[in-house]
Amino acid sequence: MDNDLFDKGLAKRKATLGAEYVEKNLAAADDFTRPFQEAMTAWCWGFGWGDETIDAKTRSMMNLAMIGALGKMTEWEIHCRGALKNGVSKEEIRAIIHVVGIYCGVPQSLECFRVARKVLQDEGLL
Image (cartoon, rainbow, N blue to C red; front, side, top):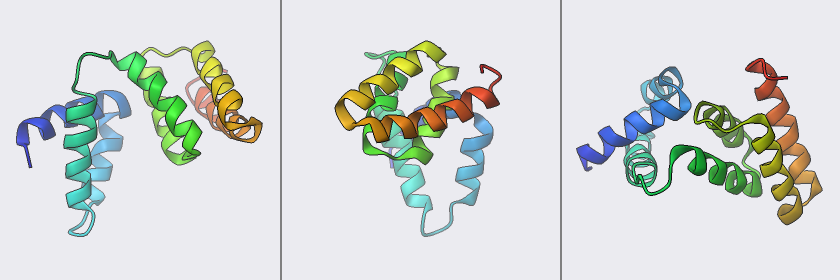
C-alpha cells in the first residue's frame, strides 16, 4: 500500500467524517476487514478526496447525490454529516435531495429526507 496516499486519505477522511468515527472504524477492523479499510482510506480518501481539483464542499455534494441515487442510506447519513462539516447548507442538502427525487424517484428522495431530517436535528439545524 502507498503510505503517502493512506496518510493523506486518513487526514481527509477524519476531516470530513470526524476523527472519532474514523478511529472507531479502524480500531474495529480485524484481519478480515483491515485490508479493505486501509485500501479504501488510501484509494477513496487519499486518491479521490486528495485530488484538490474539486473542493471538499463540491465533492460532498456530489457524494450525497450519488450515494442517495444508490440508496445506501447508512453511508448517506455519514456523508450528510460530513457534508455539513464541509460547508454544505441545509438548503443545499434539500436541493440535492430534489435532484435525487427527479432522477431516482420520489421514494428514494423520501428516504434521503428522512435521514437528512435526523442528521439536521442531531446537529441542531432543525
